[in-house]
Image (tube, rainbow, N blue to C red; front, side, top):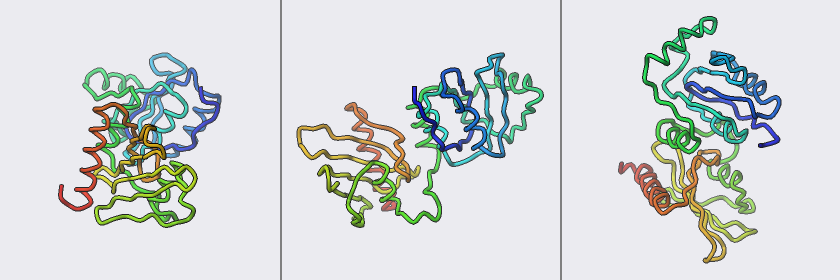
Length: 231
């Protein structure tokens, strides 16, 4: 169990979250930071630890990182939003809606990240003084000592960490807004790392299996094609 709370709170769709094993204050922080545009159904199915949130549509997905960091049990309903106008004072109407309709439900973090990467556009924080490349490098703790990352004509950025000697190679932004990052270790016999990240450097997915690395390579190449307007 984590002993701290992630402050990044924004999401779309519907989340059924169980706080039974959460750090004290997690629920309060989430609900305070969400702000307006939410519907909250407490004591879901008679369980005082379970709360169902229905949100306005958003292109942010920080709630996924919140769920991961705080190790929360969840069910994600991407087809729900406040436009359906459920009444929090009449939860049975909402319950009936879920029973009568076959909705997509995601309860595994990797699947949640896969869905978001494919179906949600990810944008950098507006007016940031840092480039997208630098934000990614900072998040992944790659130190290039103030040097400006150099990107080639294909949109590929390649930088070397001044301390560890490892090299980070990352793709241009894909059609879904994600980027693919290959971390090459200093020693050739050490394992390389393969990630899908957002424009802030948050890890959406890590690839490790043979099939995963194949998917990474495919995604990397598609991102290049998208950058070159070939897709």
